[in-house]
Length: 188
Image (cartoon, rainbow, N blue to C red):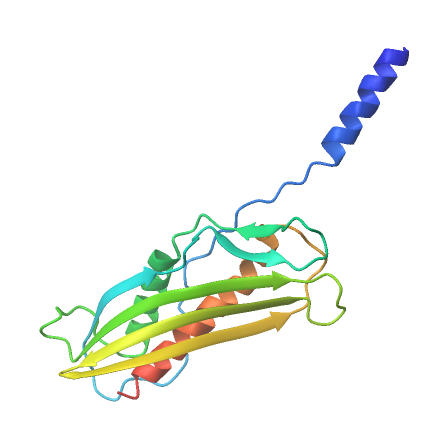
């Protein structure tokens, strides 16, 4: 009986203290663009969307005083998701994206430079902050225009140490950055 109690307590201790952090996934961009439309049906060729981050699986961390860092993870191909979302938003803005690089009036390259989500459970107001840094290179004839976009946001969420709980917030940051880029492209 004594051994059974010992085994039960050990099982309870080890199973109850296990920390499981699931990898984050990102929903596909829903057709949400409601910004300005292209004045004339310009053609855009989306040459590339690349994720330039050194470690593509870490998207943030928990800000705490512990010597061990708890990171937020994702196995998502952000370049693919961003390319898909940008294509939808460009169509909604009145652009024709079915053109070759030679036919297009604008040739666009998008580089994801940084994605960082920081959770801090010490605050009672904004405890989750995020930032996405994107570089966009637009070629219009012989003219080359480079623009940097930094989409920031913050909100309060219930105490959490799971990457899965950050999905809606990260989706909002991505959707807002896509909308910001498309709005800027309508001005060319």
